[in-house]
Image 1 (cartoon, rainbow, N blue to C red):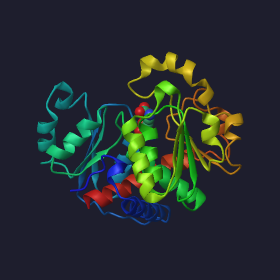
Image 2: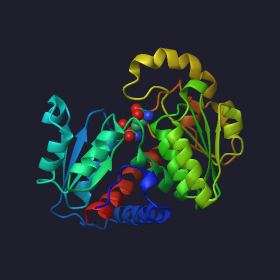
Image 3: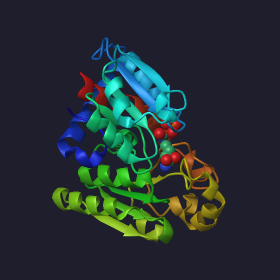
Length: 305
Ligand code: CP
Ligand code: NVA
């Protein structure tokens, strides 16, 4: 049984195969070809946090694959009232063909995969966001024609996106520089995993507090919100610290002249990014958001077919 809990668990070949399939499914869509690879199958989507892109792209994706998706807010199912992950995993495995879950603890996603009998897809935890990064890789490859040898700069909070981008970049042979304030660094577990992968794929990992160093000569510039879901009460304090990490025109100009700007969205304009960057011709945010649909369909076909 294969899951998508973390991109760390997937080989470079599996990731590239998934991107190829995502491209193929996208082409089918654009040319009006149906592809009902998951006819008669049902995906359960458990959400303990808000979502626009993940919810809509998984639901539409299942429909386009000939299957059906069920939205399960953790407020409405018994999991939110204390039913165990063990019982939930075993019960839902009797009805569903796969589960996508967005929640707080990565361990809850791992536990679902251990106790259940169906594929589990991580739709974001406090630690990782692998589905987003597959869409990001698909987008970079579309725009740049390749992944290997490019330089990605991630500037901002050392959060779930930073962790999964380190996995995705190093697995596909991209160099990655991550710049965060000193108290908001990536967890050392993920830095160590990235360094380990980079040693196998020949890519380079740079961890710094200096955004100027990180962004220099970058082909791809990425940022994310300074206060993730669950950190709303820290926002005022974070805004004070993160100012020098804003991607504004002056900062973006330090990257390569043909660098692209990416953001998983939702974006907080005027904080982590300014309008002149996010609305510029080199911003690819809406293609990136669209590719959530194609990349996740590829994941579901791979895991649930
Ligand atoms: N990027 C992303 O996961 O967006 P949502 O929170 O809207 O799903
Ligand atoms: N880091 C953000 C990503 C949102 C898609 C969060 O976890 O809220």
